[in-house]
Each structure stands twice: as C-alpha cells, then as structure tokens.
Picture (spheres, rainbow, N blue to C red):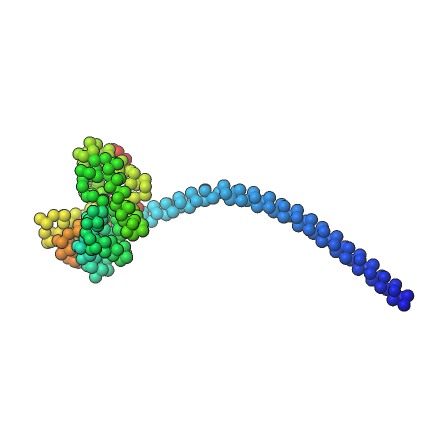
Length: 306
C-alpha cells in the first residue's frame, strides 16, 4: 500500500509539473500571438494607406491605357484601309417609314450601316419612326446623332443654341435606347457648318467652339467623302446609284481606300439602295459601320482655329 501511495504521489507531482509547464507555454504563446497580431495590424494599416494612395493612380493609368489602346486600334484600322477597300453606308435625317424599308434591304444583304437621326423626325414620324430606332439598335447597326431640329438658322446661331438642340436629341435617344450615341454628324457637314456659323452667329469661331466641346465630351464628329446627292428628288434614282458607285470607285485610287457614302432617308434612296450595294460589291469593297474614334474623312472636324 505504501508503494502504491508513493507511486500515486509521484505521478501527481509529474502531472502537476507537466500541466504547469504547459500552461506556462500557453501563456507565452498567447503573449507572442498578441504581439504578432499588433504588428500585423500596424503593417496592414500602413499597406491600406499605401493602397488608398495608389488607387487613384491605378485608375488613372487604367483609363490612360484604355485611351491609348483605342488610339492604337484606330491607327491599325486606318492602316488596314490602305489595302482593304471598305464602304460605310450612312443615312441622314431619319427615322421614318423609309428607314424601315432601308433596314429590310440591309438585312437581306447582311450589311450593317450607320444612321444619323433627327429628333423631330422621330417624334413626328409615329410608330414607324420609333420602330426604326428599335430595329437599328437590335439589328446591330450604329445609331448616331444628327440634330434635334435640322434648322441651320437655329442651331448655328450660337454655341449655346447648338447644345440646347444637342441636349434634346441626346435625351430623346437615351430615353428610347438606354444609352447616348457618341458619333455625331453636323447638319450639312463640317465644311458648311463653318459658313452657317459665320452667317447666323456672326463668326466662324462658333463652329470651333461647338466642335471643340463635342470632342472634349467624348464625341466623334464624322462627315462623308462620297455624296450621292439624294437629298433632292431632282437627282433621280439612276444618278444616286451612279454617284455612289463612281464615288466609291474613286476612293480606290486614294491612300485610304475607304468610302463614307452619304445617303438620306428618302423614297429615291430606298429605290436605289440595292443597286448601290451591288455596285459597291462589284468594286470588291467590304461594308463596315462607323465607330467612335475610328475612320475620319478628309473633312476632319478641326478643333483648333486657323
């Protein structure tokens, strides 16, 4: 019995020593952990401050990268146009029932086009005009801005007047589609717009004020380099076809073999369109849509006063 008592006592002493040592180690571990946690939190705070400081720079660099990439893509496209004949079918002054007919022909030929629309035409054209806007977007064409009111004496009377009109057309298109198109064609084109600004605003400087602001706000202003002259019934269907095809053919002799063909939302244009497409195809030209920051004609919208 004495031996058993001594053994039990000895085991008890050993256990107490072991447990005591374990508790001592746990206490040291906890203390060390708390110190490491404190260091980690301090270092994390430093990193968070550094990250917060770098975030704006990262965002700025990312935006700059996207901008540079867009410029690179545009340059690549222009280089391609030196060897790849391309036609851009563009239609001004819609939408209307004629636009629906134009869209039908384009669909049959699997061709996409660019539509520079007018606000009053859309609002006064009834269900056909609104259906045309829906189809332009859903069928993969490019919806672009022309004006709300196509009246030179109003929109070119001042930069303020132009942008009042511009705000109306952008709001209308945004309400109808959920986005704001970024491609613009000035009514009558940039060359004539300068003269109209001089006539109705008293100075060509107004033109430069308009265009400079458009570019500053991220819009691309694009004219044309082939005029079908379909804006008047005096031209006739045959001459519309002739003007389009001969104009496109002439572009093949230029450094950039790209024909931006100007047409309008008219009955004669509808009648001529299939023949225009066939004639351009015979020139071995492909078809593309205009894109923001992309191909710009010789009538580039100059932003600096001469």
